[in-house]
Amino acid sequence: MPAKPERGGSRDPATENFMSACAQLRAHPLFAPLYDRVAIIRVERNLCPPRGWAVVTSNGYVHVHPKRRGEPAEWLYVLAHCLLHLGFGHVRERPRFREWNAACDCFLARFLADLKLGRPPEDMLIATDFPARGEDRLHAFFCEHGIPRQWREAGTAGPGNRAIWSSRTSR
Image: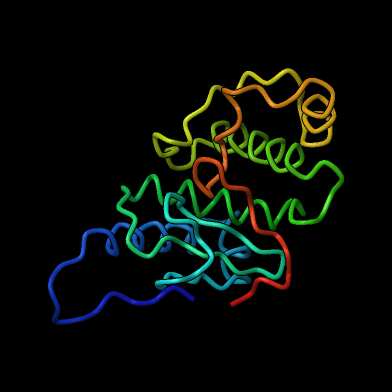
């Protein structure tokens, strides 16, 4: 469960924007059931890389950057992306994991664009005109042809980082 903003302290726009996105997910008919089943970790020294937004683990933990500034629409997109990885069962080990992760991230970018939910942060903004539909077909395409540069940064873990889907990483 995300931490509540401190009362009586100075205003923290980063936390306010993050909490606004959490509230929208709790109220959304598609995302509320997913949101209720995860634990959101937004503290120092969690698993989120320094330049990332969030990472999700296979056992339902979403590690969110504790100080990252983003608009509510950006946090909504990032958190929905993480929840959908769990909801679609993406969080499993696969051969050629790098390609699998990229395929899942691209699939979710298109899914969220079609859903018109939130707004991808600038560093996650990609074109969604992929050569295949569905994670499995994108995975096969990426395994055969490589991951094109324009689709390498669709994930929430930040530039050069991959998802953390091992259930051993639950701290």
